[in-house]
Image 1 (cartoon, rainbow, N blue to C red):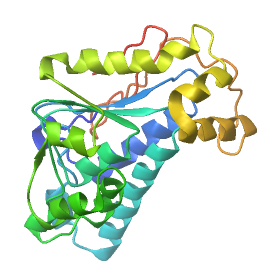
Image 2: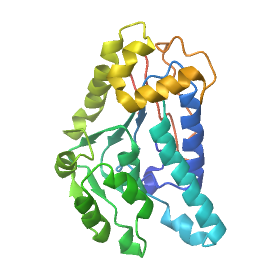
Image 3: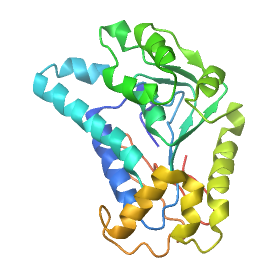
Length: 251
């Protein structure tokens, strides 16, 4: 969980470092079945921490920040587990990119999405890549060139999210999606069972994992127990994954 509610879970450098470390650890965990990314407080994620960016205007800092953010976003697409965004409130700029880069997304009816960096003199160049891979090119460009938000239903219709439910049903719907992913695999998971369930892209990740191209460990028993990753809240990330035989996730 992104855990900077007072800052609407803005992606500071410390948050990105911790999120990267958490994702790397989860990718190596053979018992982790599904990753869920959520946000504490009133919003999912406001994007980059503009206050931090203004406080560190040097090219070196800005370049390292965006390189780190790009690495996190690419890691989401490379994870051997499917990644679900649990979205409430608003997801803007890099926060909208975070939703777009996840494999799946469940949003509450109150969720709103924008890539409105243009409002502060910035064009959301990197968020545009993930956004355009989810929604139509012209729809993406309209969002990028204006400060317009789209609501959850519009995001559903355009393909940015998979499911939309009332906010009080959000956790239950994420659980339903996790159950749907896990159901075909049964109690004792074999990779052959998982491949049709998570799709070709995730299947290729699992095959790469088996070959040892990326992850060098025995992947024989993916079912495992409840192996959730908990981190201290200092930098702003706590427990971004939940997946087990009990099908729970940390919020």
